[in-house]
Length: 244
Image 1 (cartoon, rainbow, N blue to C red):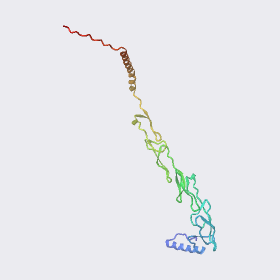
Image 2: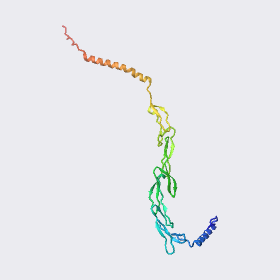
Image 3: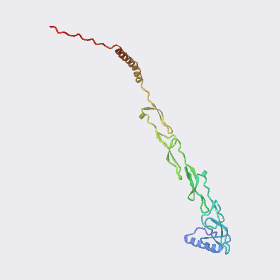
Image 4: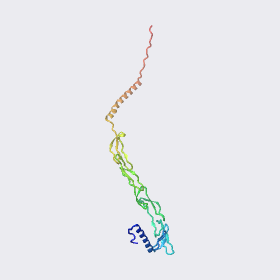
């Protein structure tokens, strides 16, 4: 049938396909049915059911002999194959785990491990997954990773910091705490605040008044003690006499 596949218009293509079909019938005999396969000898043999493959092709009045798939292999459709397909391996080193085990009629179903995202799909299944990216200090997580998408990291804006790469936090406002800033912040470290020092005269006045208060207190205590030891005696008044 070589030469049956050059480009033609639609009508010519239809005619060509019909001619090719006739040639195949002439070469191999009549076309096989939907539940049959053509053996190496050219006979149309009944297909084997799912979970089994051909052990011996049909011959004359003898039908196809089938055999079941051994463990670790499968066939999910009626077929005329002589060998089963190998079950898929879900490798943890590829970021995968077994979601459902392989049977003789169904292949293994793999899924993506937590903390990974798929980077290679085939036949609607993940073939290879990769660990989520980890945001660096000075960044924050804009969008956590999923099984299909990686983590998205963004840099902290000016005036914010992130020591662990999770969230950006605003620098401390030292003024609002009645403190002064002694060290500037960065994208990974907060500013450093310290308490304000007291004024020079603010310290001198309490120091100077302390001895004076001590003297006044001592004098007052001495006065109280003296009063207790020497109470004041009242002198009786002389009687008054009326003069005639």
